[in-house]
Image (cartoon, rainbow over all chains, first blue to last red; front, side, top):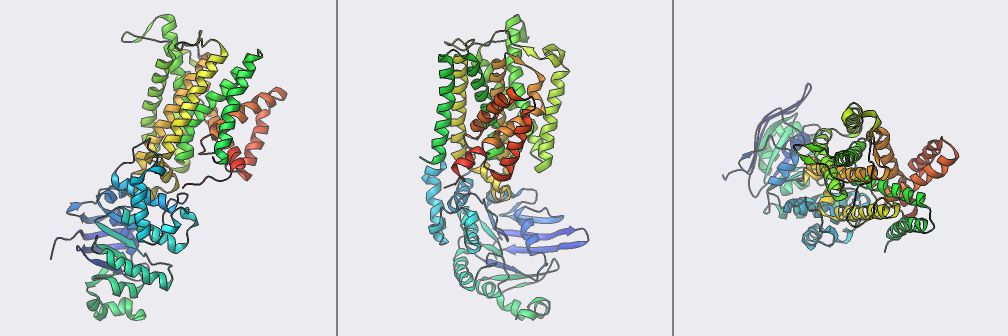
Length: 249
Length: 323
């Protein structure tokens, strides 16, 4: 097997007595979608936060592209090529959808300390940003402030922002949450095509989407990974069925 | 042209025309009053960069205002007494030089203050910036070399090449030109990539970090730039009054600058200008009727905070929209 893009070893994080992440190890391989599933409160989002850098792990290592990123802050990890979406949309609310994506384009170009050229006429920001909005099907809403977008549109915008960063890996925290069945279906098809741009660590509750998309699945229960495998292996795993799928499958 | 742009141009024209008329009919007092508006507006343009664009509620901008003032006062005093400042460097009475020093001093002091304060947010940030400013205030009071509590008089207003600054009108025009330049700079910065990042930091710092732009650095640069403009205003204020004292450094002054911005419209280009015009008018008109004029200022502020968050400009031109 090739060198993993993201390599997590024995990661631990406690909140007082609660072990939210209890010795998690996980590899994200190039070209793959790796789904992370588990019941509510299993520590999926906590894990994403630690990988993205918004939470600091108590112990363990996170290597990204061969580099230990455990001591880097969120912005530095993003610059290395980790693009995340948030479980609850997190956008610059007053900015239009377009300006939200332009901000990502500007971040990718590493050019935030320019004080004079006006962004509203800067084709080098607008054109790539518009292209990303078109890819996620949000171009017609480009000039609407993020605060006025519908829930589903905000999820699309988060993905457009992640795309604009041209990342080396995606971290998507429940991108389908709150989307209708039609929206989920469309997004599933879209995410399916993304794996060749960059591998994806996908936290998702929508099992149809997970089974359709995932190359590998890890099942997280009470902060521990109880099983990792292909879709079929996970479906058949008796422990997984008992702990988690039992109710759903 | 948007409605707000039209209002801005109108305010600028008004601010320029009134002193010209006043000078024409031989009422220099009103020219000085308009200069006061201009200089306070300039100080608030500086604060507006941090507070309006960046959402940084600095309650310590009097520090930078006062430092600019003391830069002017100290340089002028040394030049007047023909004593070298230190290491043989002479003082100066040249405004452009004084301005550069004021800008540099304000920026250099803002850098560590910002670097420490910006590790906190919310109420703590307000309190830490206030504490730093008060430290400088008490330092000025207890430093007898430059007047201590009594402050420092500038016996002759500093000079500007080609203009007689002792006359109210030329001095007004100098200040007005500086204000317009600062407003243009503010507009440029607001629309630039840096400006986008600053405004995003205000709206959602986590989002900014998630795309790879460190909010701390962006805020720090905004804070320092903001202090530099306010410092320049301080130098002009010292020359306007031909005096600099610790009161320029006190928290009242910080509060006053915030009030100007809230009155005029936070984050809006001409918010500080509108705010300073209203403030100085109230101070002059109501202040002539009663010593308790600030009671009425308080009522107006209350009204704005409760019913018109966008301040005077927000009331007239509606919500701003980012394209």
